[in-house]
Length: 148
Image (cartoon, rainbow, N blue to C red; front, top):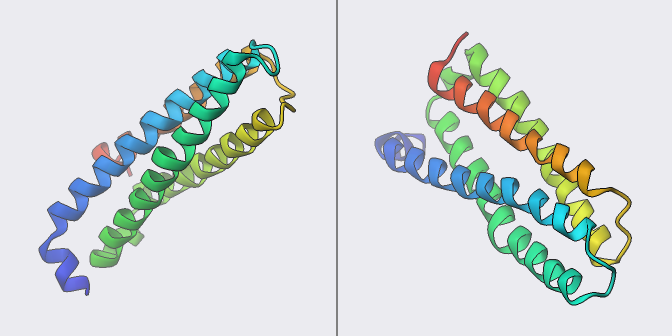
């Protein structure tokens, strides 16, 4: 299996990058929807529309893209186990685990909005919206520049 992955490494890497792009697009957009939702009146047409948008974005785009990104990433490490000895990959994994926690928080907040139980302000979501961006920058630097 590792030989097959290694022989098709650039395809695996391509699909990994595509999945990461889709995951990040959703992770950057979902908290922006939360900003608008936090300002919408409960039960309003806007609130109900945002509930549908948030659920679809998370379930149809973000979750599958995250699963694919992890799967293709793990395949690349499986084909090149020597990567596990490199410091930049450990830093990247730390950022990815943090991104996974942020993803879980986004899913939790979506459920709160779905139940009209949001506890955060639009300002909170504006600040949270920057977290995936900062993590993405760190992840890309680790993967491309490999600083250590």
